Length: 173
Ligand code: ADP
Ligand code: MG
Image (cartoon, rainbow, N blue to C red; front, side, top):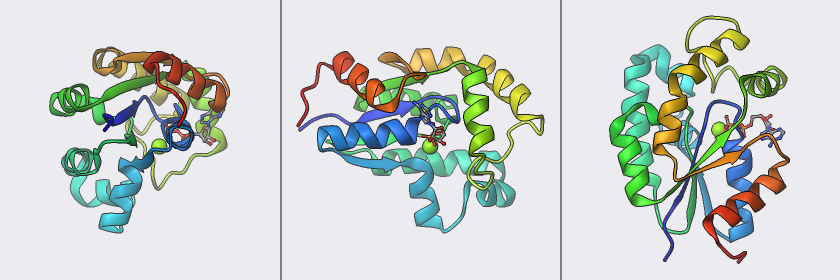
């Protein structure tokens, strides 16, 4: 039995993309808190926020994180999951936490190419570049605090998977 692996990082960091590839490589299950919320509530992130505010979304996210964490599972989280001390502590105690780190400019390019506004509603109402820099400044220390390992997220997904396997000293299934 192997602990879950939690992928954390900002929007566009590649948590879903790299998390899915990592799970495939390891023969683990893959779950994503945002996708889980969409499937269980039939509501997008934007719809939950519109109905219940960000506080309502955060409550649901904490519940989702706890519901889906299981052995032999890669869990991709939402960018703000680290805001709650409860979530940071839960992930650190229950599993291995990987911070996928990229500069704001890289994240901005990716999100401009694939905005997915229904799943990534604006956090500040500001233009995407400004928002990313501001949010990253606010959260960088929390990502670092929550993470067991910090991985350079600017490489190709397959190379990042290799880096994570090295960091965790895990063998391919
Ligand atoms: P997150 O789940 O962290 O918000 P995603 O996995 O949804 O990020 O990726 C956001 C966008 O960036 C997607 O269009 C994805 O294809 C792209 N992307 C993710 N990781 C990489 C990477 N390592 N290199 C290039 N593009 C990437
Ligand atoms: Mg994602």
